[in-house]
Length: 110
Image (cartoon, rainbow, N blue to C red; front, top):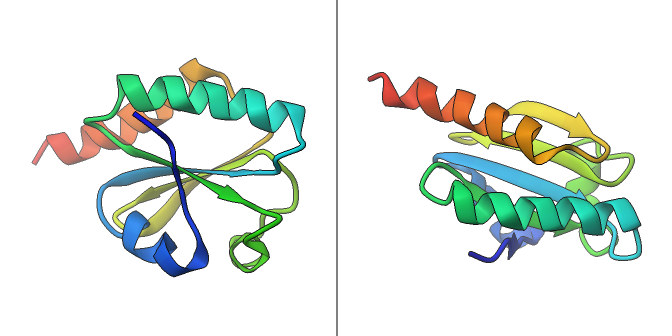
């Protein structure tokens, strides 16, 4: 499963429903490339729990500013259109997995 690239035009429709992990990245950033690799692995493992997307902060400065992204990588977790978590810097696969599963479990109890 590929991590989808988002732009200002398709961002809102993507995050409005379900759980979406957004990776804000810079193409030349080593830790960003490492984070995207981790995110791609998670996209495979948790594809039925969440959607995984990425935003190039150089190309989408408006989105970066709107969400207060000051450095890369920055990860934002959205649930049904609402930002519920913000993580700055390189995050482990375990940290991200636990965070996503925690929010996914909330919806499963209904």
